[in-house]
Image (tube, rainbow, N blue to C red):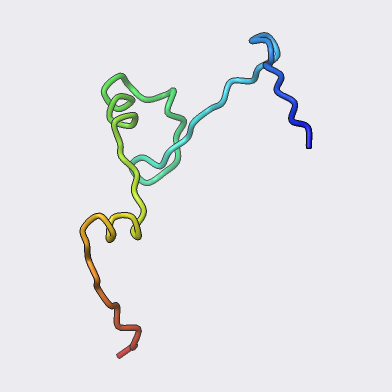
Length: 66
């Protein structure tokens, strides 16, 4: 299988717009003020399974509905 790696010229690239949910509705990050932008880029994302593993938690969830 051949893989083709070709880099685009900057003139042919399209700027990617990042949106996030802030204060109850979605907004583009580029419209944030300086402080809100830095807060957005400092965020850390996690998954529940990775968090549970890092805590060495062997929790069993009860699936019964009362």
